[in-house]
Image 1 (cartoon, one colour):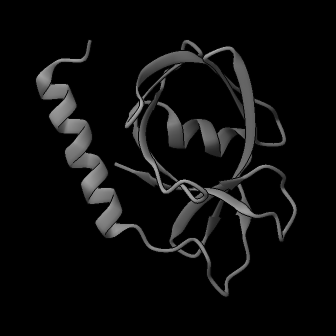
Image 2: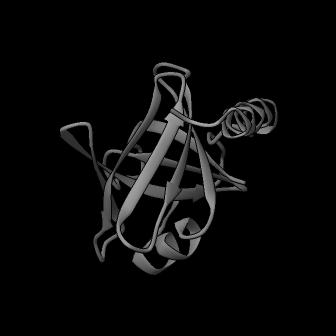
Image 3: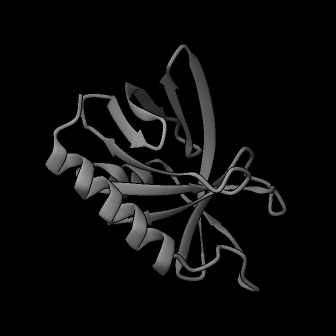
Length: 128
């Protein structure tokens, strides 16, 4: 069970994210991130993600030991993560694996299921 202070921090971060998040849609082209840039952007940082389909927010912490922890409206879960040389980042959590490609577009970050130029955005991402 998460501590009260952690829960407050998560909700404060999520509220800030919801207010400040610029749309990932932009006239600028996407720049898909490679392995080194993803690792530099994730390790030691808190990431807040907004799922486009559901509108749900979650907070993620990716660790150097290959573990990941997520907290959001559905509670808290832990799992493992890895990133391939081409930038495909996979998370195994709650008995399933999901893989996405992260990209930067303008000043915003997001991810998609493929690294195609027109791949639908799955989640908008903010580094805290």
